[in-house]
Image (tube, rainbow, N blue to C red; front, top):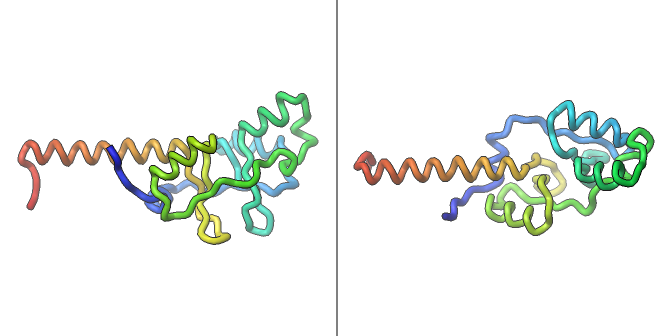
Length: 149
């Protein structure tokens, strides 16, 4: 069942703020911010431009498992680049496919150089579930004769 929708519609429904850090931020401060905000990644920006993304996975693989200290390492040393990004017109299906192929859980949404937001795999799955529920409800109403012409 293909249910189309664009990332723009997901961003319009999101009310969460956009969180970012500079490349000079310590990894410890970055993961502390992620824990406080209950998020899995942070945008890494310089001069309001996206330069990368840092995630819990980056911390685990590039710091913790290598025995490094998160209090002395800067985010710039573990940031994931190049960043996989999408635009507001990308479809939910395109983004799900991209996330699967590139093995990422967060996609920054850009319009040119302007950062519009971030969508997570959870955002996309929730959107698909909601869209399917609406479609099922419409089908049930049609079958029951509760439709408007």
